[in-house]
Length: 244
Image 1 (cartoon, rainbow, N blue to C red):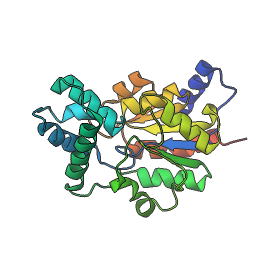
Image 2: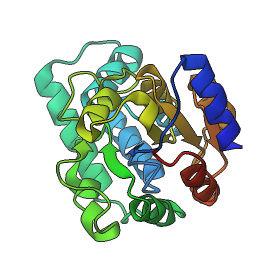
Image 3: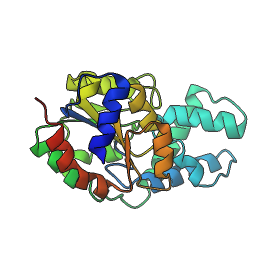
């Protein structure tokens, strides 16, 4: 159970207690079932430089900023270091490929999860490595009131992206809470590692080909087989760890 996992987390970190005052929430693959399209857009982008990789490769880089992903892919598979102009052009292509695909759907269970957090008065901070506006601009219509405009950390807000702790440290500052007063909600190993490095408990949720074991290995406090399963566990979490 998540409650037992949180208790072990508190003991391992030496925290005084755990209070669920803020939820720090990833976007792609967590709120939206967008990763298959992102992966295909990355694949098409790399084809323009003569590199053809299995689409599954791109799931492993989920959570990085666009520029960091391009730099890593180009160095590893194209054998060269792209300059800033090429990085911008490649990211433009990737963004165009993504925009040309069918609209992505909301992840099943995401709306229920956010509704419970809102009704319980838990602060919500969006923490995404994306800089694309296509989904960020949909947040207000898909999840009304879930994320205030000033409670969003994107690729534009931190110099280092996931798996560095910077995005989640920035989210803690935005929410005005300590690490033991927040929960990270993530679906990708790099994002899980980022949250864990920031000292925050992490709910790792499988929503694609990455198995729960990979999320646990990355540092997840507890793992779930789907967003719907996590949403079903929230009532107990909100009850057991309500702020004093």
